[in-house]
Length: 212
Image (cartoon, rainbow, N blue to C red):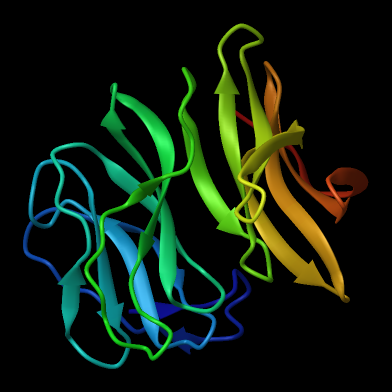
């Protein structure tokens, strides 16, 4: 496959890393060292499971096998575990962490650890740069709004930090920032905010007035 800018410049050949005859691969995430690609797929069942591909090879490993939907995989900065969303419990989505490798890099087979447990849908986890925290979206049905929460692994605490959907924890200029989609009744905007401690400070609207 190939891609280019709308003016015809920057012509690039695209490389396909997964190939299937049935189903769909989605939610790709590449490890920090560029070795692993994790993704969700219906290649083996009607619902999504999580898979891992060693880039540069055709070796694909199925990481979850559950009749529920397992989506939004995100590999930890050290590459030893992934976080993902699943509705395997009470038909609502929660955040899970699945250990993949031990300290020596040996593959281990573990049971996913449930991180959230409430009456909400909790989706789209993203790791902090140090791998100690996760940010995710949580739907408040009473307020009809998506909130962003941070889970601290060391303290096992959860704190609301603001509003937004599909958060990504990024490091820009030495500062930790949260990129998210902010929604209202008529539009969606992509927003970048600086995170200091557990307080968000507005930086910029990256894309504004994107219609729903």
